[in-house]
Amino acid sequence: MYMMKNITRDGNPVLRKQAAPVKFPLSDTDKQLAHDMMEYLINSQNPEFAQKHHLRAGVGLAAPQVGISKQMASVLVPNDQDDDQDYLLKITLINPVIISNSVQNAQLAEGEGCLSVDKDVPGYVPRSARITIRYQDFDGKEQTLRVKNYPAIVCQHEIDHLRGHLFYDRINKNEPFKAESGSTIIS
Ligand SMILES: Cc1nc(NNC(=O)[C@H](CC2CCCC2)CN(O)CO)c(F)c(N2CCN3CCOC[C@@H]3C2)n1
Ligand code: NI
Image (cartoon, rainbow, N blue to C red; front, top):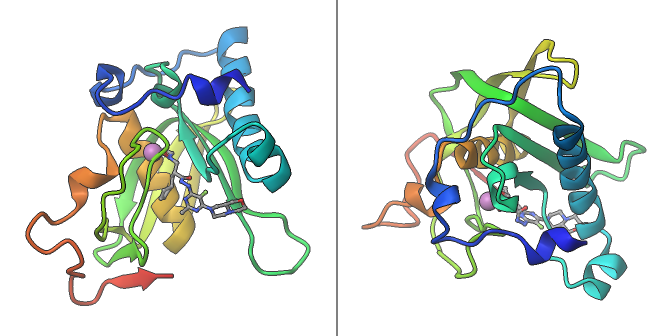
């Protein structure tokens, strides 16, 4: 798990850059990066493994957070319903673009954190409640993904990383826990 030691922290300029588009066909390095990022998330969600290797749990990870300024992010949102599906969303987003979003906003009730930000920054992080993402799959084929609520929040947090934004940029400085009327608070 070399990756956790190498998670870039706020202050590293790579987190404030616009990441470069990923080229196709994917290089072996890029394939390995995608694999390693997803593997990190899977392991970080295994309590025993995470504790043994001192991993902070994650449901998303963007390439700039491992020092690679490329437009690639992994999302692994577990399914808390006890039906048989393991994950609500398990995907690697390459060159993602949000092509449409709802007027309605949503925010996590507990606010957000970030593996690259060691301090707690309290406050709602308002995001679109529903988004449509165009991205490329491993073969470079354009795909469309529609997500809403919790998975949509995670995808937006990761896509922000690819454009040099951090979650606290979006917290209302004067009233951190002010929710726009009509927005959804997700607990
Ligand atoms: C919400 C949450 N954020 C966790 N961490 N932060 C992250 O994932 C950051 C990205 C998320 C912060 C808010 C939106 C996206 C990482 N980011 O910096 C990447 O850019 C969690 F770990 C977590 N869960 C719930 C599911 N649980 C399953 C079992 O294992 C523990 C795990 C804990 N939920
Ligand atoms: Ni983050």
